[in-house]
Image (cartoon, rainbow, N blue to C red; front, side, top):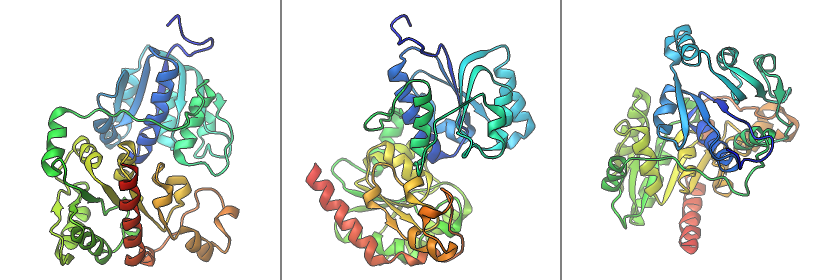
Amino acid sequence: MSSLPYGAPHSICLLRLSSIGDVCHAVATVQAIQRRYPGVPVTWILGKAEASLLQGLPDVEIIVYDKTKGWQGILDVRQQLKRRKFDVLLHMQVAFRASILSAFISANKKYGFDRARAGEGQWLFSNRRIGKQTHAHVLEGFQAFGAAIGVPPPPHPLWQIPVSDSDSQYAQTVIPDGQPALIITPAASKAERNWTVAGYAAIADHAARQSLKVILCGGPSAMEKALGEQISQACQVAEPDNQIGKSSLKQLLALLGRARVVLAPDTGPAHMAVTQGTPVIGLYCHSNPRRTGPYLWPDYVINHYDRLCEQQHGKPWQKLPWGTRVKGDGLMAEITIDEVKAMFNRVLVEQSQRS
């Protein structure tokens, strides 16, 4: 600790409960902080599912918050933090339940978002603010918390999320060495943000014709399982390996790391793939990919958001509040099979040139 820069925090607590994609973004900031301040204790309060993904994160104490318990979940965290005091709290979540949790965290400096972004009363629970940003990606918003405590954003974000040997073996069984693979994670958190069954099936067939193994991945919800079955049945050439609901988050992370390319709407596994350096073709109509897109692969996004946003709100996105969404069923059908095929071909060519 004696070699730390002057003014380094003595201990750090991070409050970011969810979602899967957002905690992936936050990992890059946490690990940048650790590189700048090696040895400084870091505690992270995380949601239950998110904790299962990040378990074993190097030199990070994880405290699990279970929102399904309601107030008891908050009290459980309070009990674990009893008689503890941190030098710094990085309150990285604009949600009232997170702010309530923050009230039970004792810290000298409590950093929240700048006033413009500190919604749901978050500004009432902090005594410091990060710098203002215009049109920042979610990941860059988190980097501003690092900057507030003396950690400038690195030129390129880095991630180190551990997976066990058994999880790696699972991934190798599904995608053997030397087997190029397309992973499709077809489901977003809301069904309206999913692309069409016909579209997914057509890209699966297109990939199969180029000798890529096609794998469907996702969570265990009834909606995701049904979508996977529909895609499999609609395929004419491909015979997808349907792994939806069959893997843990750690196994999924290992699997995404072995893929040649991932096709996904705005969903957590897309951002998990980014942490593994795997190219992602993002399908965006409802949210601005400049804010929530696959961070390392903005050029591979199929973006219909700009046009639909202006059509729905009467103004270009630049003149609307940052984060404005486009709403409505059927919008994802605006994305054509041909444009996704063209992007898929481009990714394969560019990635083969890089390798």
